[in-house]
Amino acid sequence: MTAIDAPVVDTAADGLNIVAFCCHYCAYAAADMAGSLRMQYPQSVKVVKLPCTGKLDVQLILDAFEHGADGVMIAGCMEGDCHYQQGNLNAKRRAAYSQDLLRSIGLEAERVRMFNMSSAMANRWAAAVTEMDETVQKLGPSPLRRGRKAAAEE
Amino acid sequence: MIVAEQKPLAEIRALVGDAKRVLVVGCGTCVTVCFAGGAKEAGVLGSLLRMGAQLDGNVKDVSEVTVQRQCEREYLDGIREQVEQADAVLSLGCGIGVQAIAEQFPNAIVVPGLNTSFLGKPAAHGEWVERCAACGNCLLGVTGGICPIARCAKQLLNGPCGGSSKGKCEVGTGDSKPDCAWQLIYDKLKAQDRLHLITEVAPPKDWRTSRDGGPRRIVREDLKLPSTGGQK
Image (cartoon, rainbow over all chains, first blue to last red; front, side):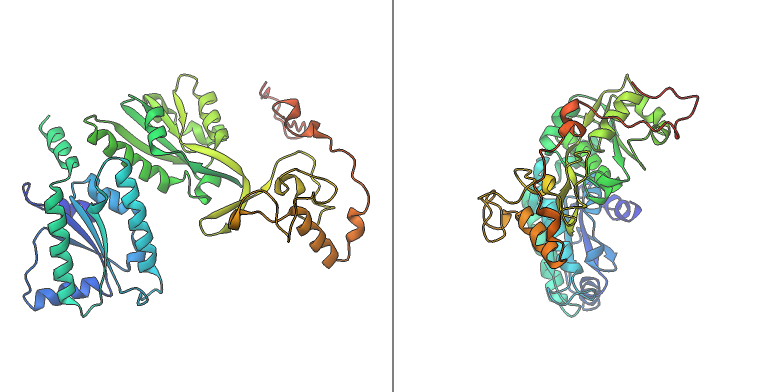
């Protein structure tokens, strides 16, 4: 829970919160490289490192939204290249299941999306974050955040 | 084990209704193993109920707790305070768990979050199959360990019906066609050279040990404690 709280709570109230669950072996390294190369990408994304996207649990995604995220991206290895054989494929199915769950309570499924990249794809990381940011910009802030704000003011 | 699956979220939300304080009670035994009502599923459902209510402009105080076995009063004693504070208790146990909570806490509003499906086993990850009908008079000793009551659509006792074709039952379509239980029994006993077990005609089954006599009960006098009167 604290892993989810921190990236979301640290964000300015008016900005968008996109939590990115990144695999240690690919997307996290790609994000690191993008930083080293001074690539520009939206600051809305907050990275949570996972040992593998196979660690991703539906509850983690829901926790992120419950704690104020506007979008959740999952970034794992290229299909067929998982360090643990099929963790990224498990994550893909869990992401799809999470989309169904969000839809069932009236939240847009597009707020969850899975991306695949290798550790050398700094460009792909920057592009994925930009793409996700654009998607969430179009959808607007999560309606759950309005509820949180109202509850905090009460 | 008892195999169950979660009810559609819309139905669960309708059952919970306007209750403000909701306690989701998971069960750590069968329904945990079939991924329907364990601690993880209780957590996910709790999140969905909270967020769903928030999106509808309401606030629900939803908390989750999972007991090792919902069907035993000793485990339920530990959640008495939480149950008493809740406006509604959403049980993610099987039908037995739901009733155990309702019996132990007569004032609690208890609703089921699962549909209890059957007695079965995992066939593969994410897939479960029925294996026992709890008929109360086990035949597996003469049928090669394959149950014609649970696995034959007609619960036949003397070989397959005319709907058996190429080892498959006539019910279902395509890949969902179950195996013909009697084909399985024949193949198994033939392989074991024990076909004589099914050469004699089996008499009509005595169904009094099954559901025909209403709710069943087993009493073991050697296990009863003098201080407990037992249930009526």
